Image (tube, rainbow, N blue to C red; front, side, top):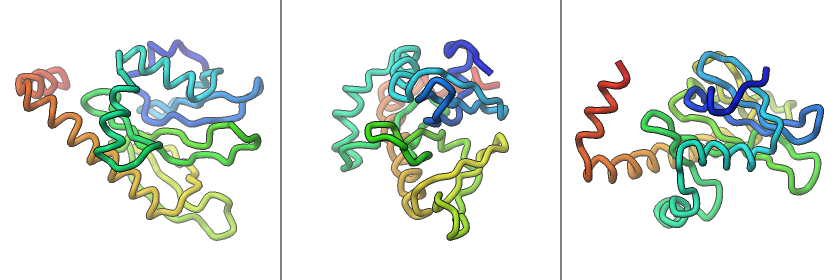
Length: 175
């Protein structure tokens, strides 16, 4: 199903690079389990999402690569309730194709190990019912999820110290 990105951006729980009919594309999994195919690469899709959220990836990356002590594969906040962790969600067929996608840590229900005969070493089950193959060891998946949780704590903690009213406002919007 195809929809406008602006209409679904607040409901995205996973951003998965896929090979579509026209080549490299992006699968967006929504909180109700619905799948939306975005016909652009994951890099292009992420830039559009960040533009919608007015998120400055370059400034965030400068600060959080030092905080998390990692140069690449940084988690990023979508909004107050979702922090996305990078996970290797496909094996690229061509050099230069994206292998990593992003999963909202709040949507993760379970991380498990696949059978040794499968190419994907582990899986992530989402609350919406989807099960994603992950091409990382389960301990690496947990490491990415923990880094994302720490980044969320730091990112929102800094903002709440400056404006504690924001927490009350967000809580009242949720209900």
